[in-house]
Amino acid sequence: MTDVRPPCAVRWLDGSGCVHRKRGASARVPGCLDIIDQARLPDELVRLHLSAPREIHDAIRRLSVRGAPAIGCAAALGLAACAQRFGVSDATDYLVKLRATADYLDSARPTAVNLHWALARCLAKVVPASIPEMDARLLDEALDILDEDIRMCDAIGGHGLGLLRTGMGVLTHCNAGALATGGCGTALAPIYAAHAAGYDIKVFSNETRPLLQGARLTAWELSECGIDVTTICDSMAAQVMREGRIHIVIVGADRVAANGDTANKIGTYPLAISAKYHGVPFYVAMPYSTIDRSLPDGAGIPIEQRPDCEIAHCRGARVYNPAFDVTPRALITGYITERGVLDHV
Ligand code: MRU
Image (cartoon, rainbow, N blue to C red; front, side, top):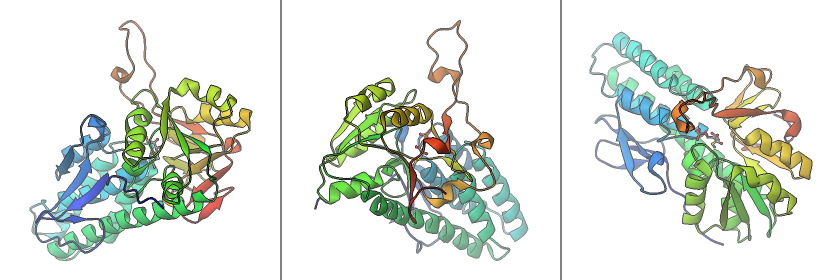
């Protein structure tokens, strides 16, 4: 057995500087959201302490904190930090400010359903009461979201482990690991579980253009934990499958529609087509909270458009830069969730 400890992407720092990842922190002295600044990885490991709406919104927008479950946890804890600094004495004023701050944080990125889901869950918990009581309820709810996420990642890892055998090659895209969640990840959770169980697993990490979450983040967190990881360009995945080196593909998800169509980082859809062609099983790993049952299929999933500067090299050319694509349900072998491995959602 190998004990690996992937890094904590999101946590709560209370007013006396103590780290919390579950309910029990005091809200009496203002605390803050504590994240790893992922925009600076792997060159520098820097933590940011955030407590103002603008800085939390911008951290989500510029991908200092990213990955669907992680932005849900960060927004919830961020909302609690902002509320502790509202400086109002009236419950109505507090609730008006709370809703406005939640709406603002929710506007940071559109595709991951977890952002809206986590903020809505926090808002629903706060009913008119004294200010200290509302602060405490909000922080408890945000820490519950974080704690549940940690436990869901572990459960996903346990269920996904059943799909892995020693000697397998696993291909993943983007980063759906510890950096993308409150816990040990979704797509990478079964890999951490397999490593802990002593399996010999070889991970192939697509570089994930244009922002290189695979080459920078997945490669960093797995290699930090001593897991065998090889970075490949996105365009190499089909060739590596043809060479017989990939036995399973596992990716994360930003939003899963009621029929199972799945939005994930741009480049996931062609990976699923390649996997189908080569007879490689293709799994989506995600918590149940990523399922958006209000959408019958993937056509309604809002797709974030990112700035031109992320991919523009030539001034005269137009740029089209969607951050996510939608993989049709027909290309997906199954869903690894905290409730088990499902063949439909
Ligand atoms: O733009 P990003 O880096 O936030 O995109 C992240 C992904 O696409 C992940 O695969 C997804 O959010 C699942 S994270 C467990």
